[in-house]
Image 1 (tube, rainbow, N blue to C red):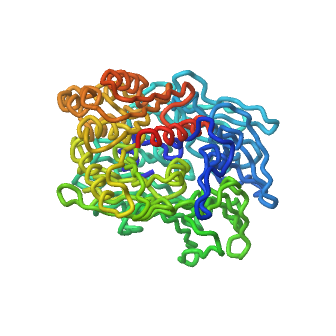
Image 2 (cartoon, helix red, strand yellow):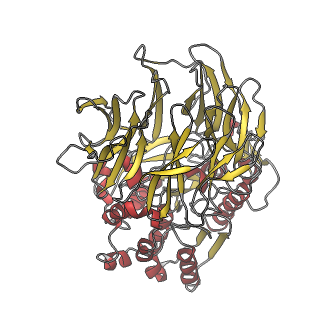
Length: 636
């Protein structure tokens, strides 16, 4: 991951998790037909299947995914030839795929407990039995890779000290393990070389400055090799190593506004610019043989992925595919097959397998509900407006099919998570449901959003609830100038930081927006920053640089916290919260709801007992999305 992503880590919502839908509307599909245009219920939108994962089995006969067709993400394997899916786990907890073991059909996967974000690493044996490899109520663990021969694998765990992630080596057969890097300097392990000789270590000094080092594990007393070799503040992040450890690849914004990919030659200690674009090069990785390079560029709210054959130094040309962007690229062991997902505004993730270099490509899943006509969904456009100080602000605009000068529609400003997140194009059942029901949605990437350069990213540092809020107000003014939007019916909604912005808009600009939908949003910054999870210790300084240190900036944090100004809220409010949220505690929403209700203002509150920071269970997402729609129908 890019370091900017790590700095923007704090309250970033998992976009797919904040999708929400249904109480118990009609069972399936058509609600009304106007000029051959259908509207669909929340249940129908979430009848669409959510999938993730694309790792091949060693024999390349199966691909491992997670799918929520059972209501919760569980593991499935998909037959490469037939597309037949076989369910492998039956959990009531959301289960995410990692990969097959290199030499057999065992599977590694991860899950937490009801959204508490203490993810554990599990193994599914060939007979279907599962085992938690990282037990413990306070343990958080993350997979870090296999050795080249597959006889060992590595993971990061905070079992020694809840604040710090140490690196462990596990025997692939016995699961016996040993500590091989003790993180007693608060240096996060970001990458492990293929030869298991080097690890890349990342040190956070704040939201503008990080350091990157290499450590030679074969030399116990070897000094750290510093990669972040610039004298000014800059962000660095590991991308990975070449197969032979000749090169180390890393991302940095040290040489411009955007993240570039650089290459460090281990033998000569030479740094060379590897890839530069006019946007952030978000990620870079290689196939096991190093023949193929996969690169993602975050270009104006859309990640564009290219795969390059390094033998010819040319981007590979894919066969004819439906419209959309590819992601999640993986190769089979012999690199004859490539798996990937295809996604667009009007099509959720679908899994494809391509015989590399041929015209043979297979679509192995069909995720969109069979009751939805894709022609009734809406493709977004990129829109820009000038804010209060003339700064150009980008956003993603969704115009309902039936909106026109003669049929002006209500609109919702949508605010992403963060601080420092970004709204991106791609399929969102949450957004498509509202747009399908006649609500315009404008997903604003306000100042402080990632993806538009480091200057833009830092414009809201310690200005939250002020300049960024004015971007929302001026985004509303932009919508009011559109001939197909009703200028008197504009609301605001968002999750996490976006939920905070919603509450802030109603508290600090009480006459601007007609309604607000706050999805697990921060309401009391002092408490939130004092109660950050222990495993975020390495990011604490970044949070304080971004928002303020409660011990130093308490007055300002109190001033921008909507809870302490709830008496100003006069417009209808819907609040949705997960009871197990470790980032935005339930008390944040409880207290805001109580305070606003005392104003005799319409307030609705939905609490999911089995969710955390984002809603992963299909029925909860249905209930939330239907609640959004019912609330807007009543109040907007």
